[in-house]
Length: 344
Image (tube, rainbow, N blue to C red):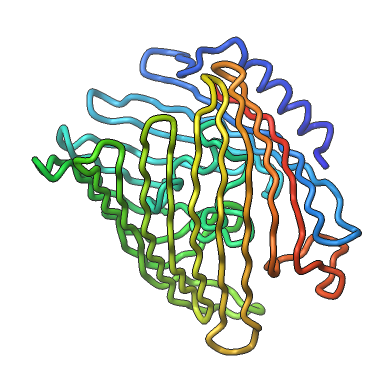
């Protein structure tokens, strides 16, 4: 549960957000402050001993213009599962040309559909992220320390394209410590001539340094993600599939999702996803999981929103909740989430 100090901090920041402009709060010429976060109560009935848990995410993002073509980005975050306050983003964004941008510092890995916005619940319809981007798998919940070159161009009758290439000396998971190494990769985006239809292919490969049982080690990591999104009328259809190799472990994760606008302030969604985790060394059994979720989003105004979600699960979790053992865990279980989010 949240401490009184954390609850007070959340209450203060969220209350302040009510009085701010929904786009940004300009503190001085060229300097803007944005904020977002959520508080969620989640109940996962994986065993008779399971109980509700509270999680929260509080982020403040400041941007400072440097000349006509540069901008510094800095974000600090407080997550319920991480150390008290962490430096989430710190990078310099430089416009080399009207269609080309260079980012240097600690930023998001450009992977899949949700990598840049995964922690902004107000921008998505669901209370939870797909397994591919968070939760049990957490395959793409990473940032990088390095540089990213982003180039956009028109393909004429073929639509529009974007190429983001990056090289990094460290990978920064969402809640764990940064891992040093050498990785390189990118993301190719194609906005097709068909209105609302977008394809993305992204990934990276390299070697990361870690510590296992007190001994320094090095492992090879490789990720490949294929994504598609189609917006037609009140519908947004999306799907992604990925293969993640980290040392001896191999993840295969995929999902399809359909979301629909029901009214100006209401949206609903349904999502089906599957995960398979195997160990090439044979030291761990193969793990499979399936999840079918439905939910709704209500945007009460420019700043506030409510997300409700329920899901049916089968398979096995990577990490069981406290008090739950493999013997007491149910092979099929339900979970439900209610979340309040804000943005300014």
